[in-house]
Length: 121
Image (cartoon, rainbow, N blue to C red; front, side):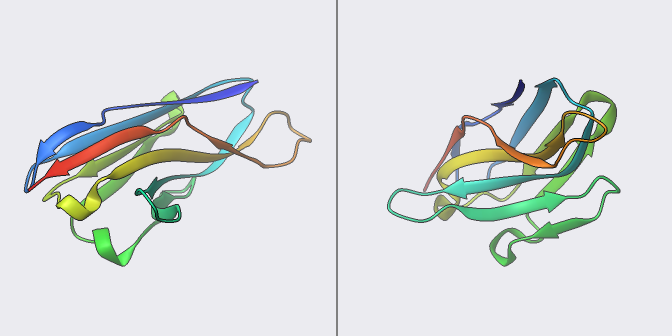
């Protein structure tokens, strides 16, 4: 069994910063890409940022130059540093990871439970 546990969400004023963390645990053989998605009320879930196992990153246009994704492979953890936050960044943020549970296993997508980020104007 694999679990992704997020932390670091909360309430912040516009212009402020937050750092999200997501730790993967359980029967993990290898982790490929890790990423962050978000879903605002009444909207579809969207990609925020993704990082490959080699460190290649990709960002949604709306967060470029404000958010930074990073990972610690030794800790099976991915981070999202969010700066210059805007009210439109308000959403539930979900961690995602592609994980193989054995040498011959397939890559499976796992999701965290989500953490609320609220940015007040």
